Length: 242
Ligand SMILES: [Fe+2]
Ligand SMILES: [Fe+2]
Image (tube, rainbow, N blue to C red):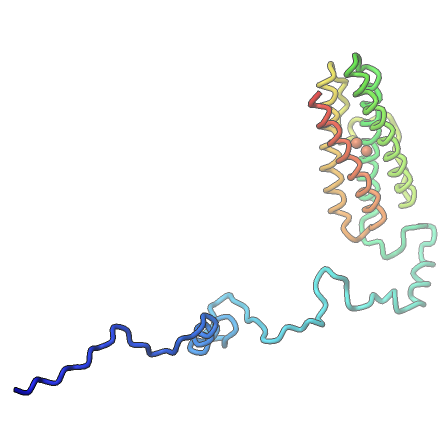
């Protein structure tokens, strides 16, 4: 008897796509459906901007300077004319874009803060007693000298900007951001000085942000003072441990 022809056994998996690498698979997918971002307007989801096919590496990047030269750098006659305008303003040239009065006012507040901090450190350096107190007092003296130095630098800049530094003791505490705390014991003195430094740090950071690129000289001065205040705060944090 003739045996019925055996059906060829069906393979469990039928391979229709040749073995491809993950990269090839992605390529196939991209060919099948257009890139929703790079594709035409219809296939792009709303709100997504198209990605340019070519990236222009010669295009100037934001924040790395301006490719266009400012007019004052190419027009010597204009530069000379501007410098002659309001010559009594000294260092403040017509291109100073900030409100000078506001900058001077803020600098005078910082000046008052430095004077108040200097006075507080001075007092604390005398009243700190005991072995620990003598050690801490040395640090207070050093800080007081540096606050006075800051006050001088700020006063000098106020003069350059055409203002008048305010050293009037009347209203000094009101003009200052930091408070004058006498402190009853060593720990309290250290803590109060630390609080004052933190106030100065926050104030200088905000001031620097306000100045931006419009007044690099004042900004650099405040940046150097800020670095010193951070150092003071760090010293005081260490002293809290003793
Ligand atoms: Fe200071
Ligand atoms: Fe300080």
